[in-house]
Image: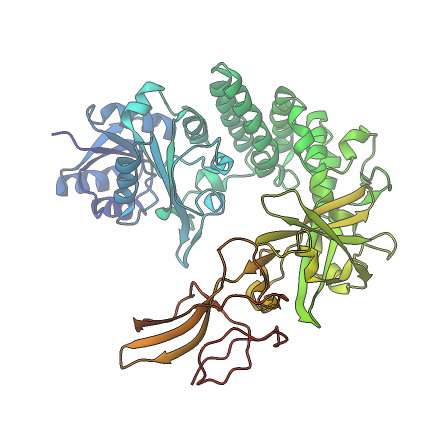
Length: 611
């Protein structure tokens, strides 16, 4: 029977690493595979090592060819693979794989039926391993049967070797790696993401990507070589050609999305080497990068940062010295944007020698995005006291009157909003915590607010719900608004629940952003006692009346029905959150029968367990 998985390993002058790579494949827990090693005209002992390994393990075989490059070697390996294998994968000969890598990828494909599966990657060297930066976001969580249109971060998954493809999908689209260029992975990996019906994303590490410390530099370590610029741009053009070859609005949208990624993430990989590159590198930059930007056009520019828009314009126009001036400005001032104007603020870079279209320099949503932090949340005299800061992006907060703020609470799932005024206060820490404000300060970004819980009532009645919190800030360009974010230690900032009536409590939560939950309590634990050696006894009470979001308070003038009590004896288990809410403190003695808290009893504080 043919193997289920064919693995292609191109090899060229990797005698220092090849044996380690092949050993990691031989040790895979998924063992129904073949390995086709394509020696691409090595001048060292790589071919000898490959042949010796194939003699020891019959799952491995060697194909020899004259040197033609990585893309050609991969294509030859595919043509020599068993034609009836179900899956296809590629491995670079200087890298290694965890023992369970292919088991995880193929198990996902067997479960989901997706066209291919891709997994997380770690970079490694002699001193250890760390998360691959380029794979960090896309592979943070496992997602089966997803797609790049649902999860756009997959556009960063450009590598060839962290994947297993269904062979039928590969052949249906006639994939081939480009030959004679560097950066040959993306012209297959990115179109595959767009062409697939669904893909599986595995957060577990399935590939160890080597950083070469000795011997010849890898492709990704030749960043200031002019050939690197030419071939990277060629790689982008091949992806664009693949998408342009498909018709329909769907693929037109995919191309727009990809072009935006090219301008915001792909080309910056070239941008950062322009200052240190030589004359040949800069000439290639002007010709290739400038030409590519002209091909893409200006449509995606509106969603870029002002700095990225300016870089695209300067590269397109061949204004290299000013381009380098922008790189140096970002380096020296922590990417801070110098701003002028109030009604329509614009970037005001001092190094520009010739005019630039004003529209390019107008600050967009990225530069005006509100930066906020809640530093303190606490109850005092039945009111929620909040303290923090908020500022509109790169524009700072340099005066008290120019930085007014208000809190906006909105009930989830409903249109109801309530606005709470704030008081502007000095907050030097806002400047300290905003390194992007190297050219101005935000000392007046601070605020304090007093929130009366009754703002969360509906028609004067308490109803269950969760309220999100936004903060609106005035500044250059008008009013700016965003969610009120928590501080560095969110869990420690959560104030306790506040009982506004014996049956209703308000729970502020700072977990990423501030939310306020109004909870109508329908069951309370009043006592917890040991019961024998292996059980605990819970005593509590249920709220009277029919369940629902609103009901009469036990302190209402009319006489409420008695609260039904209950007792439960359960086997002991490690503590975990209870379904019933702890009661507000009552004046009953620990040994008395359970009763509802009397009217006028304290509304704050933790419940008191029985002895």
